[in-house]
Image (cartoon, rainbow, N blue to C red; front, top):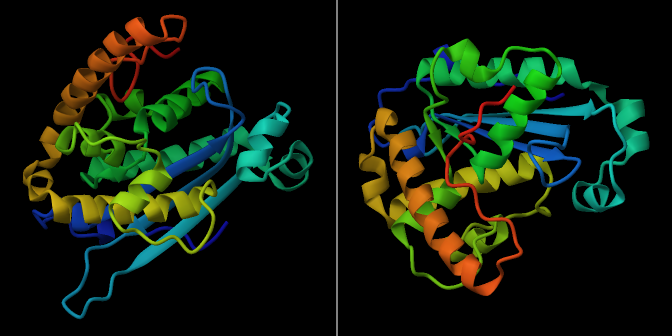
Length: 258
């Protein structure tokens, strides 16, 4: 694990242009694509402070490798590079990793520092499901409220540029917003850094995003996601009715996680 992240208490949260920091970026790599069934393999957190007058921005990266307690399918290993053998020999017990990662996320949300996650519904649902699976308190139960503040560049991009053609994967948005990535995506810490850079470029291109207050972020994105999901599901019903529809709730499913 690398240098511990900055403490939320050490980061100013008074800058109204919240997409430019302070922020906590988050990403996971897992055993599959179903957040209600699959398991945590790696996690990364990137604390990014607001840019100083001299252009310098303080940043700290923390990564975890977990032993998920199950076999990692070859298809998942091909994406993120972690095999079952490596996770068992180098990874820490997944319950320990979940506890530490959730501590940082809860601390940030409590301090009002936005947590930035690309496709947040996946990573946050996985975290809450995994915490419950291992008998640990969920983040929602610890906060005593819904999760937030959270910002998801995928949801925000769909909201501000709804009719743009093409896919909206992380790599696609890097191209759209001119974000250069030196390393391959699908390593959690690389994905987090790219996500934070996309958010900044997105807010520069669409200044209205910065006008959303931290308390408005979740409600705005929840409605934007629902609008997209309902439209997508209507299209899916016509074009590919055998495919499972998109979940309309955001960032967590309507059904309780237990």
